[in-house]
Image 1 (cartoon, rainbow, N blue to C red):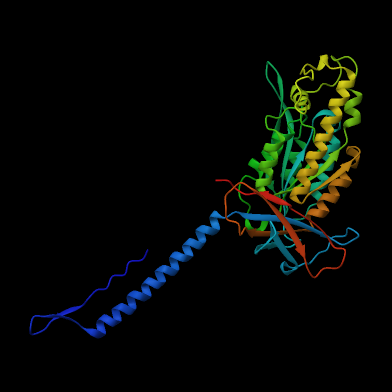
Image 2 (image 1 turned 120 degrees about the horizontal axis):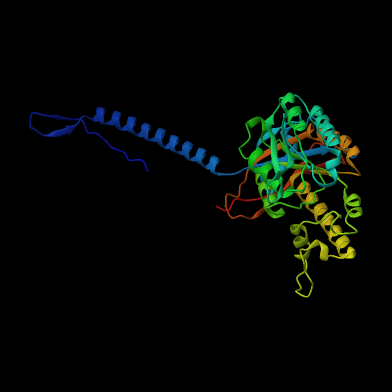
Length: 386
């Protein structure tokens, strides 16, 4: 609230009475009112700035292709309209396809891929080389920490975001192998450690996860819902080069339990958690599982992985690139790099300022583009609840 104070300049006349000098009083009143208007204007500006800071900027990565799947480039901000829960939003930030990108490159070096670590490293190096100058990359892989009591698979950030290709080459060469798959933990690590800080303006809406994995978790402390929530909060697009390891896994799942590849206790619990009935006999002891039950668990775990990757990719505006084996990973990485180089980014402050923790649906509509144009964009986000 502004307080207006009027100072009266007084003079003593011959009768000892105090009277206002009319011209002086009028001048001071005008000056005072002007000052108060300026103060009010400044206060309003400050309030607007606070509101802008307190309101979440929603990043929307977008890929536009023609009916044949070829990227459409050189679109302008005027070609895009963004809706949130059916209501049009004002686009305040726009990134063209030529703007740089930040990428978290996650390499699953566990399980059946351990024998192919050099192939993984070569594919990763090729992917990094396929990116454009100015694109920044972080590298994440798995390793095994050994103690006198046990060996534990953990996720490790080998390099933070950098455009230094020599540092990235060294980081990829350092990638080791692990005796388990802390996949969910690594997704949380990408969200919290790689993309934990707000992006610089040039990278707004231009961040992505690129993961080479089969998506079957075995040892994480976090679960899928926790990982999904963290990734969603960053607004990054999720891409997966999905390696099919199921045949290898199931071939080595049969036979004597002492020599077979085993499920982890966490995987077995995840399987039995799907059964609501208490009539189902449950055990976390792998050796007590028959071969039929082992195959049933394996099938369900791979189905879960497929669904989770599809969900993360679809809702974020990313994509899943299935490959039969690691020899095809290089080609899939090239496709990912090409798509990242043709991605638009939009940003808006939601007109719904409620912090109610609800899910908001996003829809991007195009105008002034050829018939048959296809669009893939982030589908929604969860509003903050604080």
